[in-house]
Amino acid sequence: MSPVNHRKKTKPVHLGGVQIGGDAPIVVQSMTSSDTRDIGTTVEQIRELEEAGCEVVRVAVPDETAANAIHDIKDRIHIPLIADIHFNHQLALLAMRQGADGIRINPGNISPDDIKKVVRMAGKNGKVIRIGINAGSLEKDIADRYGGPTAEALVESALKNIRLLEEMDFGAIKLSLKSSDVATTIDAYRLISEQTDYPLHLGVTEAGTLLQAAIKSSIGIGVLLHHGIGDTIRVSITGRPTQEIHVAYGILRALNIRNVGPDIISCPTCGRCEIDLANLAEKVEKELKGMKAPLKIALMGCVVNGPGEAAEADIGIAGGRGVGMLFKKGKIVEKIREEEFVPVLIKEIKNMVNDQ
Image (cartoon, rainbow, N blue to C red; front, side, top):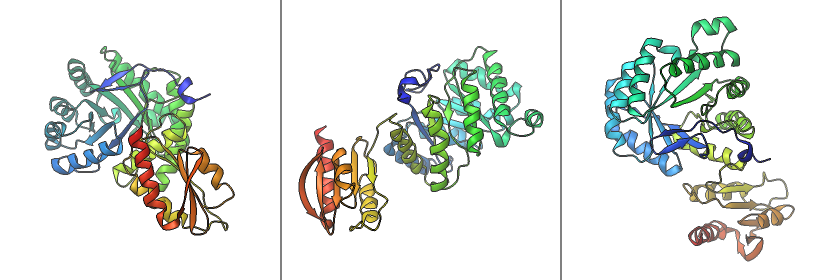
């Protein structure tokens, strides 16, 4: 059964113009790595994220200058903005006054009395609150009781803070229960999904640089999505934020949940490969950066599986010694030389996108 057909239906919340939960598609998020106080650089980074397909963006708010910058940033971007708050609840209040569509708070570092002040303002102004439980900053009493940041400890923290907000009749809640340990992350989300219907924001925190982050996130986020758990995702990568978007959509494509952007199939190569397939794949990926059309593109390096895989794709090349066959929708279009692979393929892909 497709994950789309058995995904758990959660309570929808509306973050700016984006619905999260309910019947809405899985929403892809990221976070800027720029200094929020540098408005120009932050806006430029958010626009790059928008172009890559980011649907919600989060910015760090370490002080009042950063909180005040949200007003000017919001005027120059096109997606909902979340203010990331730690320790100082006054920054959450100021960020909402400056136009943040939602806030992310970590209950482990803000007192219950101060959280109540934040909730009152969010309720009056239609803001969404993400309760962000992190293994690294779990409440000390809970961590001590469980002997560390176990999945059960993360869930207890989440439920405690949900009750605090519910007692104030506040329901515009998203939840995240993140750990840098993949197994703990999976277990925590499975447990909380059984006990609440609030939309879940999935992610493996502090996942590392591109390769490690892609591996950890594909397993952690992918397993949960495959079991129908999750409403919005953020892939955490140490590096350029746009990389997070590419990996996130790759996970969604691999599970047939959302078909956004090109799905490039290329063989791992072996001794039978007679073309420079690695270089070809890199060039095609670069040329198609930012493309939103959901095309399946095959780049195959030999005659064993090449023709079959290329024929199954929307478009593809099956290469041989210095030459290859261009396929479209299962039919051979033409024979082309290896030096023509990239320009011919890109031209044909653009024609296909324009005809859609």
